[in-house]
Length: 159
Length: 109
Image (cartoon, chains in turn purple, orange):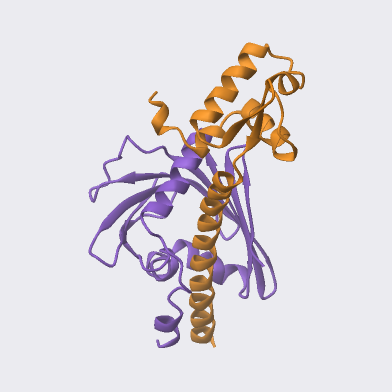
């Protein structure tokens, strides 16, 4: 169902998945902060967007909030936007004020939407500058316990 | 770099080391047999083998007068675990997105 691959030669992660909604709706879920916050963080983390200016040169500043009150701040600097088809950004780890953490590498994200009626395929490519960066991100993800239960299904179904 | 800090990720970060791992994954090999597969000097291959030993992803077995290098499969599984972990994060995330989309669609109706 989900196509996930790591392309070591190109130092990139590829994720491809179809969603049961039209392209406009899927685009909205990826580009509006209130919607993004409902799904972006893998359980048990919760995403909270502090600010978001969805335009080229604009930025999303958000936190991944852990169950014990820990906060991991990150940002996205939007580099191109082609409405409902594609957007790209440069990510980074940072503090609550958006000051970049120089210890962590940035990576290039490319999110592509291909809709056909009530189905939309999303293709995400995350390109890292160095292979070591990719491995560091993988390790970091593991260490911070971005685990992996079935998501927020219960909460969302209850809404 | 402190050898103690080397790990499976550094082991696979270099194309020659990846090739060495692939070769010895199928069968244990002597340093000479390994070096025959590469155009680089034996010394260069030997350095990569040393590096892989420090990463603790290969082991050496002495058979008679020869040393054979073999893969430590459990260490390589470790790498697979990281990837599975990352993949599961995305699956988890997308299941949540599925629900967001269901809710959006029901609001549209």
